[in-house]
Image (cartoon, rainbow, N blue to C red; front, side, top):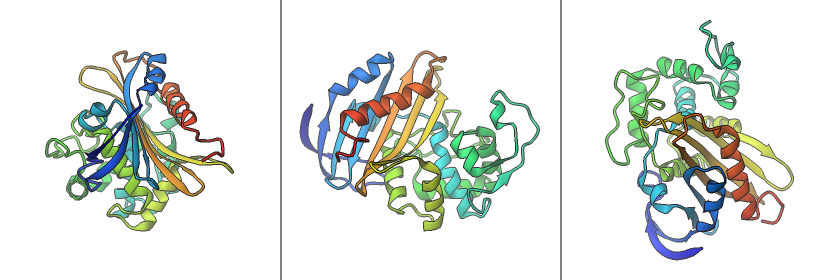
Length: 273
């Protein structure tokens, strides 16, 4: 591991730039190589103000479609605008049979978030409407790291069709702000979304995250897991981003295995933190 002091933008929109104790950990490469996949990982220790990263240039400089990680923002905007009242709000199925049979039903926001159903959130985006959605994206500075993103005629696909792109450090900034109720939404809205992100909780730790999976212009499979792990009431924020040239790469099990392998290497989930 290589350690030095730099002023790291984590990120421009969501973090103030300040000197951080940054560790570049190339030992994590083995977890990516195991799956023959490229990617990056970042972990921010909020208590110590330290940042550990694998593949730093990719973490700070490379942009990718957010895919279903945008459901975090879409949910917050839906709650804030009253398009959904809470996580139990149901949107009726439009009776169109789609490839993922589990999405072909009336569904609450909680279920749509947890099994990550695009049609439910596409309908939510249409109900929010382009002007309101754009206003919130502008307020957040979302997907504007390198260019000014504006929604076109793709209100219900911009997070999936490579129109909007984000860096891994932008994603880290979002989940950190969300955890501390620092996004420009009501505390209630942020609390509801945080509750939907909680996947594991026991006496040793709690693990909260949102996944994402899509395809870039080169037809590469792009995967995400963004969130935090909390031990002894101490949060650590993480982003894992993956990129495979194989469109048929089995992203779902690979991303969670890589995440947990890394967290275990750092001593998480064992009651030792």
